[in-house]
Image (cartoon, rainbow, N blue to C red; front, side):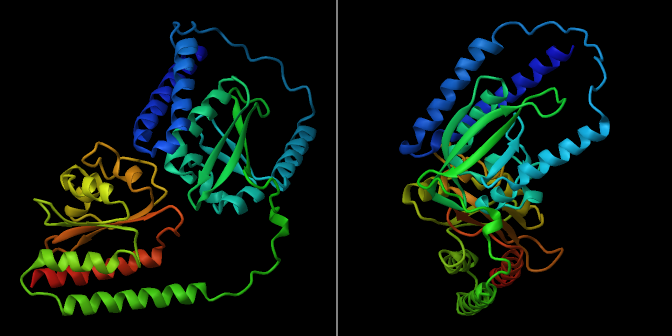
Length: 377
């Protein structure tokens, strides 16, 4: 039954990858060739491997015991782990579904993602939306034993710098399944500074102080806007609040008024065509917005994995892909606990900008209460 179970898992994984490819159709024309290549690989895979009937299960024996001394084998594994961590090149070990199993020191420096955070999460979450489906398909092909692959991807934190990725299959120890080793290098510079080359002590800077001052200025601007806004016109107050947040705090701002009957009041973003399509979306089709309108807690997502967490826009494309979202905040506008929701604010940040922090989420939650109080007058 082992081979039958493996076939079922492979088929389920193929269905998930096809869903990702469908979601990637809305990327720009320049990025479509990578998606098309991935789709062709998947077609070749389903025609050659998944179309025949699954093989019948075969009895598996326990096999002979380990030929090496257990202590020596354990020492060798420790040595290999140490070598993996100290490799000067950024290296990640992922499974057939592109979920990170290990990330070495150089890779944490190169990607800007801590190893503890990355482990157990899909590596596609660290990549630009346009590259995710192609990366998943290539990883799956290598895990199936179809040979090494190479492709160029872009990290969310630096989307303008191409990263050359080499994928090769490994069978660590006595594991039954093949895992994939991903080696990352800048496409325009093969030299990667090793993690050990970092300065021993961080150079002090005023970044945290500057961010705190920026949040204070934002609170001041929002307070002045709400105090000077019209009384008895909650939609206009919500629009004014959205304009305060747009640009200086978020790349995109989506404002929805009401709770039971949500009404899209304002959409501010960088792409006029995408703004029109997102503005035409029915807020009731956006799961996160509906949850917030029902009195849910504020939501902070960094590198969201569910591409349809905010539904599809009027063109049928996932909102998260259309706006190139790398982090988002969705907060209900509630004057005080137990009172009715006045509306929902959803903020996006796109590639190239730092993700929303917990401190920023706390600040927006405070402003949301002030906006709700002003709308209730």
